[in-house]
Length: 325
Image 1: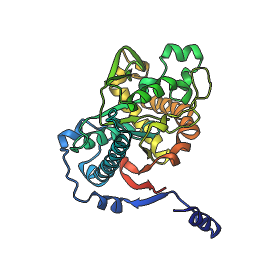
Image 2 (image 1 turned 135 degrees about the vertical axis):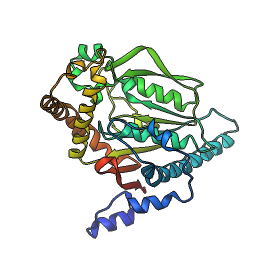
Image 3 (image 1 turned 180 degrees about the vertical axis):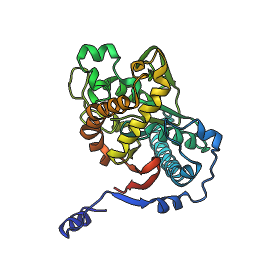
Image 4 (image 1 turned 45 degrees about the horizontal axis):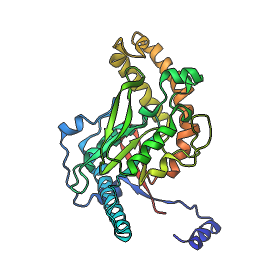
């Protein structure tokens, strides 16, 4: 759409949107003849807590998305090859980077794992790595030292400089790049563990604030580059806040009966809460931390995404928005 069309749309009182909006049925039809290579047994390993994505959901939502991404990856690979041909050298392998953003409990991790599994089954890019930004949180000791332990998950709780260096190394085609590992059980960085990335075809980076701009460095100094500058494509997983809140509280109840019972769990103290206490605690944590982060830092980045997945009840995608400009 050119600038004249945009200005005409505004002057005529029409609401301009940079997205093409699809109903579920319209999006499903874009699958074309893409085969489903996942089985029920494969899907079982990709689910999140209290989130059961059906094969129908994969067929109707994630298969068309994998087809779109496959086309984008192929086009980008050809563009890189054209540049290398022009420069007269082969150059390093440049991975295609996909960013996935959204609130706590909205289902980002499940979305990322399903996309990873589907993309890895396309013949042109079989090596797909998944990295979460949790590993780039500052260790708890550092958060305590800075007095921001209560703001864990907020932008200032991440070592953004380290994350940006990681992405720069990946994008430059380094033979091996490592990322820190985060334990949801101990709620902290695991000092002795790393994830190794060895020149994959695609890297998926999943996290709360990956679409945020105006990144700050170690001492609050503004960085000249954002995490999203390294993305070739970005996805925002969306749902109404009241729905995400329900999912969060439901997940808290599940964790109370499972992970929280482990004595090594950072949240072991919540394992003995009554139903009333558990709901009150989960509601308080949601409102004081997760809802605040969503409203202030995560939701405002939605319009920066290339594609928005709109969820309704039971994590069912009800609509898709694809950026057109």
